Image (tube, rainbow, N blue to C red):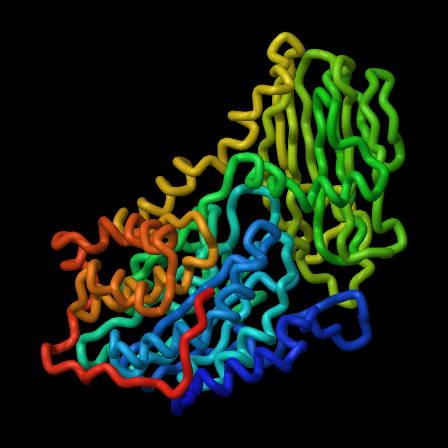
Length: 486
């Protein structure tokens, strides 16, 4: 909630000499060098964020594997971003809060939240981000947890005068349909009686902020390279079979407890750590955390292509033993591949400290028919959750369609943020594009920005954005240094 003024010249000089931005890699928890936590200044647990300035602006980055560099790009553009907001007087008294978003089902740092700042402390906030670059391989990240925090843990003084803030999600995946009470308790500290519908949380959020999604498009090849990357990495590094299968069930979790993957075959055979190979060809080829050796464990049961028998299968998860100091519940995820189609199940085991059979959590029950085997090249259904149309449709269910802003170049993130602020401050799109020309942006960047903002710039769309500043807005001021084209 700090005041002051962002000095672009100081920031430019700092960038020419500093090498410590984004070097934070998670602070080890006491007594456990392998477990990592967010920087204490960015922890959302038991905190709230207050903005006394007239215009709160939140930029919430997806920092999972596919989008880990976006925060670095905006860090480099901060002198231009803040310089233009202040020089052009797009909005009065801006203060920014940066957030980093991961996947609370698998990541250690799924939410990091900075204070609202108006001066060069913004650089320090970005530099403290832990770019964990995890993610769960589901086509979803826990954007809804960030939405919950900013909806219920911010105090915005601007609301008293009838103005909202601005919140920009920067990411290219969907959100989970429920805000899990376990995630809220663990990472925010609130005790909820039940999970919340994410649609309701986004509705609450939009009572306080005008909310936008900046969606950096990627080629299908780029997107596919990131799909299932974390689960695949763990399986392959542990020596398990990930590709070339009829059936594969992979279990991941993120602590030292000894979770076990159990599979029942059509013949009634039980595959688990005590019976790793079935007569029908199924095999548990990875079994981790027998002695609590890692905080990134995996188990993997699979049938090589052409070997799985027809019939009904069951998959479940059991906590064999606790290796952590406390008997807290453990979140896990099971990825199931059947005939080339991938599904995911997220669950919690040992809610009340159970182990053994009483801790069992069913994950999947399915019928397998080898005649339905998909061609290796048929990947559309396998990656359906990552299709642009699927992701955009989900976001359009909670945001106005014109607030979903598509870009091709991540370097345009700051340009689009500035464009939204300019439009809501009473400028038209042609005027803003001229400002881009004045700061040396290319025709390609201007064209892409115009495309992203086109729907928002229409009269109908602007009616849904925060009302423009009064006509007597402050005159544009000149800053000492020159903006750098990035």
